[in-house]
Length: 250
Ligand code: NAP
Image 1 (spheres, helix red, strand yellow):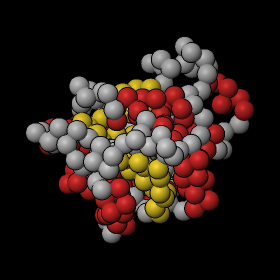
Image 2: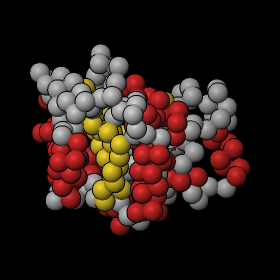
Image 3: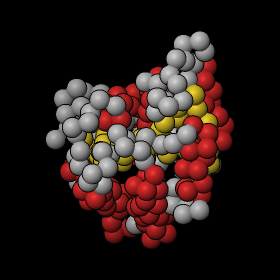
Image 4: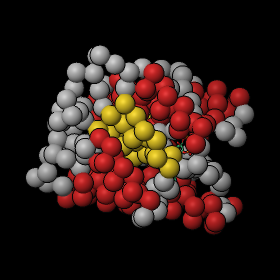
């Protein structure tokens, strides 16, 4: 605790949506290790969110958890309110919350399509609106696309379409924030070992997808958190980009 030499004024603050699990959680832990105070947002998994907060505080960092559906236009402003009230402002948004349902286009369940649109597209707009209005200068918005957009794998049409929307809005927002000294980028991971990727896949499918990259393994949440840390911190000249972090899959 004596190590916390950062004053209130110097302390940078990050909101991480989807911070309870997977890539969001690893990003929250990495940003906390970088010195950020972190607000961990989650949808419903209270125990995982609290365990993410505990991991950060036990390592000497600062974190709180806040439940909010990223597509809810009342809950998301409350998330930003909490960050401002607790830590004094918001510098970085890592918007990792997302859902994925896979099916061939001919068989897509339209309710599942609507749910994905709501979380992945509407959610990115609702969260992005608050970030655009409230982030302090010197800040960064980091959205999540997916490398599957360029891989065009069968079964991924609906999910990839939502990520195409995320890329489109990311690039436009980067230009709309001209003059604010806020960077806006998207990270597009390849197959990464999280619940989202592993759930519902047999061992053979996982092994086949892991072998796609020249580096011949799955990404880890920490691999992606490394990229988030770069974009949230030193990468002030990277703006309006989609950074494909996938071990070299073309
Ligand atoms: P994950 O392990 O399934 O974790 C998803 C996180 O999002 C959880 O914290 C979950 O909260 C939260 N969440 C889901 N719906 C939400 C909502 N409506 N409001 C607030 N939070 C919500 O996913 P992941 O693999 O880490 O994925 C992170 C991001 O990377 C996603 O945008 C995903 O599309 C993208 N991505 C992942 C991969 C991959 O291979 N894993 C590849 C490319 C892109 P609860 O714990 O409360 O459920």
